[in-house]
Every structure is written in C-alpha cells, then in structure tokens.
Image (cartoon, rainbow, N blue to C red; front, side):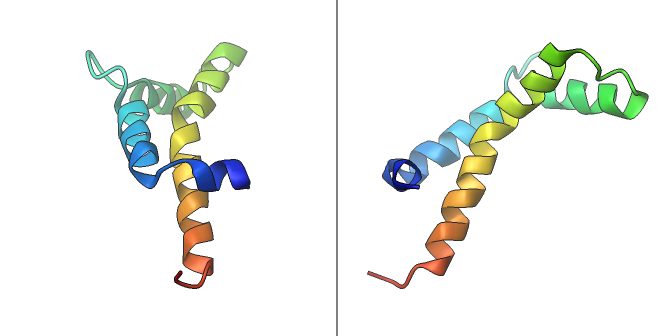
Length: 74
C-alpha cells in the first residue's frame, strides 16, 4: 500500500470527480452503464471493464481515506 500512500489526496479527489463524470456530454458513462445494468444489457466485456475503469479512482480514494482514518495523527 506504499503506492497508495504516495498518491496525494487532492489528485485522487480530482481524478475521482473527473472519472465519475466523464464524458460530461451527452451523459456520463456511469449513468449509461448503470441504465444498461438495470435493463439487463450490461453484458459486453468492454462495457463491464468501462464501469470498473470509471470507478477505479473512487475505489482508490475510499481505500486511502480508510487507511488515513486508521492511522494515528503524525
């Protein structure tokens, strides 16, 4: 987890906001993919990879915040 500790928190926040909203026009990929999931059409491997790709920064941010919560203040 040393790599995660080396990533600045601000960078992860910006990357998370960007990737959750990208592309901004006409609609974010995650909105489209979750709609496809609800309709049972999220079956192509590329679409599933795309969901994980767009959620990756949010996952890293959550891990970093959880690790920071467990550490004593320096």
